[in-house]
Length: 284
Image (cartoon, rainbow, N blue to C red; front, side, top):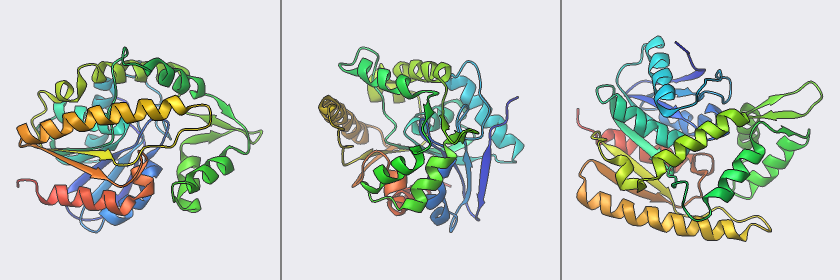
């Protein structure tokens, strides 16, 4: 049994379990969790190889889901609504698939991926692997806080989230997570889930789902204009699939928010309101 690092935000009401995205940590949820505790009991988890959770090998979705279940058992959490952002959104849905008796529902905040053969996928993978396990300079935190300001994220919120996602080194530099081995395994899992498309991936998940897509695209860095084209093309395909799913499957709700992919840091109030409304509408 491997127990993952958790933070209990407290609160009373229906149980929520929050999962963060790739190369992030549970601290990304601080602002939303503070709002959600008004009507829920909120627990957040660092995924394996992220934040303060231990590494696991291999990093596979079934293994991660099992460790989440073990961790929730250790904290006395039974039935819950699992809410995830990005990678955490895919894991939340897979947790609900494997544990239908424990998941009242799942919320996926912009957690969609593509198959390995999707045009441009190899360039995204190369970028993620290039930073996996890297040693960042001492100025890394300040640089990331400045970048976050472009999205309207307050400096204190950005700094807390960035610091929680890396490990300080004695020489003042920073170790980035996850490591390269975990990153390779995570990418394999993401491509596996993305290969059949959104509708194919969600086949067999019967509990209520809230699928949230970002309404604004992340800006492309200089020299990476191709990423904007890739992002827009993939987002349109996801949007088309989500629209079809919402018409044909009564257990699936779809929302779009006026934010980029990092919506839980950009607009925690909107995210908290969406989650609260979803939980309120679940059957008893």
